[in-house]
Length: 114
Length: 111
Image (cartoon, rainbow over all chains, first blue to last red; front, side, top):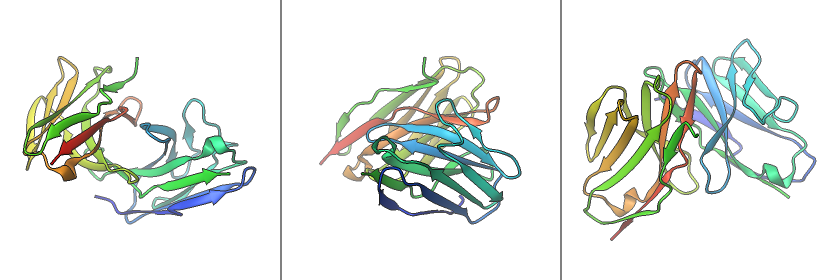
């Protein structure tokens, strides 16, 4: 399985500010996924980030609000922009496994917007 | 209709019993199926994957897949209090190149 390091693990932010979450993988991966998980809910896919191309966003998520970078095959960032309390959630980075398409997750970032 | 559906629970079983978790999916072209365990405040952890009809066993865990019925289940034998967690069912759709997760079933194993 891939080893995924996600930072920060948690943060408390003021509304109107932005937070960038980093995801580092110990091996090269083609696809990286960013999810949001609100309390008591399942995972909602925000976007898929492939190296060398723009991220593909799911319905309800836009690039201006959640810009994503994917500069190489081991790293990606997700920025939560112009935050409001509704953005308070856990954000998870995920990568595809080397075989059989398993998904592995970073430790998650618990974001609280006040 | 959601792509992946699970009973949210909670499912309560006594220690030592068999816990049975169920999941249905809507897309017939789904080919990869997964069970994840998520402890409160932690990220999901892959515990089982299954790709063909039938049973797959790994220790105390058995995954069962029935593609005709579009049904996948997870059995946990000799349940332990440490198995108390939320279990997420997931499918990977090759035509969309992404995972779909169920809402999760909360399992409580009572000592």
